[in-house]
Length: 402
Image (cartoon, rainbow, N blue to C red):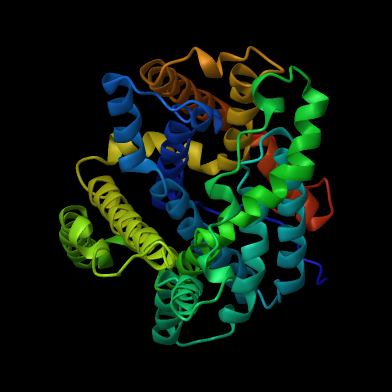
């Protein structure tokens, strides 16, 4: 790997705030989902179901997608800044992804829903596209991935009678492991997460189209980095408003039209997967359109009269890795059997209200933290590991360029 000296550089606070907003949405999904244990006993009470459905409609799939897009922006920024100094950062970025993957694997032993190792793996696929100079071609490729080509292939194969294509994915029917619900053993939970949790997660990520979606969104994020979308926000006001308007129209259209659109694909007892896959694709495109509404709406407010309030999320976005891991370290034991085992007693309204309070506390914590430090603790460790040196500035008063 090429030796590069790490240095502290100015932040794009709009990107940080957006990343903090995405983390907030992801946490708001995890809490009423009881960190995946909700699915062991879904609620029937209409009031609690309203809480659950409202949060999931707004944030589920959208917050994760926003993080993937921000990941692509950050990838470009890192590669571009080192490239402008005459340094090829490719090898060190691969090493950086390896470290993120290690963090993700360790986090996955605690909580099988970890997304860090997924982002780490998909980040490797971004590297070849960085050499591609045409933004138009990259956007065409991104669109290709967002159209879910593997699902389309499966649909065609199912219609042609392929058994594998008409076999439901395992994650549809896989039960929640008893170790999470009644095991009361942390060791057993870790074992299940390693033995069964990883295959379950990757089966879901592949067959639900998340891997293709992550790559597509990361490529779009890379293009946004190239055009300096976050560095020169005044240039893109019209683009933001246009994208917001179009995405809002598509979102409403998919919301109202999905029941009719689903029936466009025939269904039979023998060939049932094509319609199910089509339904999943429509849901994924709805998530993407609503994600765009959330993103462009957030940024339009951020770069106008909402800046002061929304910028409170910027410090959160600067320590997303630390806070993301910290959230599960605290709340997995709250819901899982090896801890308080509250998955069977906490209702969705309570979980959402706790999420709001806890996230507000995290905002305060992040602001206080960055009064004294330059990076979040895990962010600093990741950066130090990337450069294989402990001389990365950490204490704010000791800020230096190495």
